[in-house]
Image (cartoon, each protein chain N blue to C red):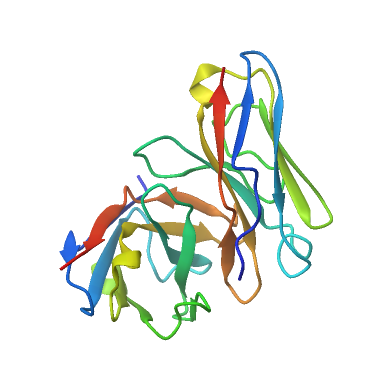
Length: 110
Length: 121
């Protein structure tokens, strides 16, 4: 269960769009639709942003979108806002009721 | 309202055993499809999935920690308990419990606020 690989940091100006990648293997990301994304502000618990690759929970802005191709999942944020500055983690089902998280990406709004 | 709340000691000595409790409300641990996981986050580092217990008492552990972890639940008390043996300073982290509802959304939709554990002599 090696951690999924994410870029350490991504930045953008307000209003711009950014994309965060999450690379796993054929044993996790590549095999299941159960990829989720979490947003974590400093000192807070993670919050579910995207589930099942591309679904948004009620109340999450449609500026957040998810996709997957092969062993790589992606989170896109459009119309970047100051409040989007946070850490973002992907998470994939890895079989047998187990999960693996990504290495985390710090998003900075310039 | 669905909530989870973690509790446990803030300071543990090296080699000791850590016992953490997750108390849930707003749902039953015996409801089909309900799973509760423990997830930890060392200071400044990434989230790490540790263990899960399902509504039917099925249990799974992180392969890297399986020999040190035990997860259990007491449905009547609405509690999930995680024990971790032989603590080391690298186990210093914030420990979260989180709910997963199989099927929809089939992700960790509700998290506790976390409990911080420091391992130090």
